[in-house]
Image (cartoon, rainbow, N blue to C red; front, side, top):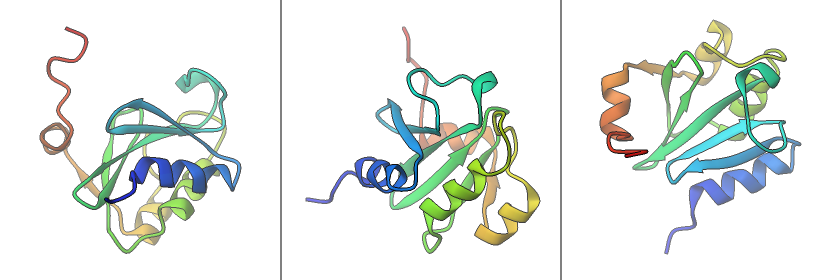
Length: 119
């Protein structure tokens, strides 16, 4: 049985001082905030995993596919170093360094459907 990628990533992030909090079965919020994460309390973004790939999403929301060969922990550290407020877009230098590919909302919704949540 494959290990849960969210648990594995949460442990790796904790080793570098970042917090990964599961907010949905397919969503891990990355921050340094204890408890509920809010965009006005510090930098944060979230990751989702599907079919071996990670997807990074911001508060805009902007969604990015992370190529399988990229170091996701290093990517998280780079994004968290951007500033002290919520990440709304990944900066161009990080996009280039990690070869992130922006996807549109429709693509993201097909991968991680939210319809029916909260009903």
